[in-house]
Length: 194
Image (tube, rainbow, N blue to C red; front, top):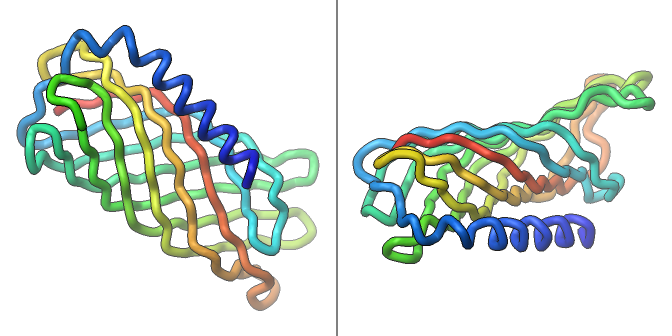
């Protein structure tokens, strides 16, 4: 857990440091429907009764929704994370589907904070042990900023933390064995139309 918190703090510090030059440009105009996609990397751990080791993998996201107010976005977001087989023959993928709310706290600031609630699915295969799946409720918090490239378009720099509630892992060749409490920290760059 400590390594996840350290990475989260580092991501927040980096985002704040990079964000300062773009604050003066103002916020992208928000009206109607929005859609965005992003790519990046992330650190994930299984936790619970399993290893607390943090693994790095590739990550991506897709989000869409509408504007309740010019500074309030409500919609859905899916995030994915993948790590290919390592020396131990482990393939792992994670996916989350969330209802999210994004708030731009300053009138003309391109900075936003985000919260979400939904579900997380973890799947994987370990050579010699079979495959496993784990589905659970999860929460999400995030932050980022928009780099304005048009009146209603922006490049987004984002950081997310997704935490799954504790639950069982089901193996293909046996009954449920142990509890997991998975979490992911993501850093990414995306593009959005507002």
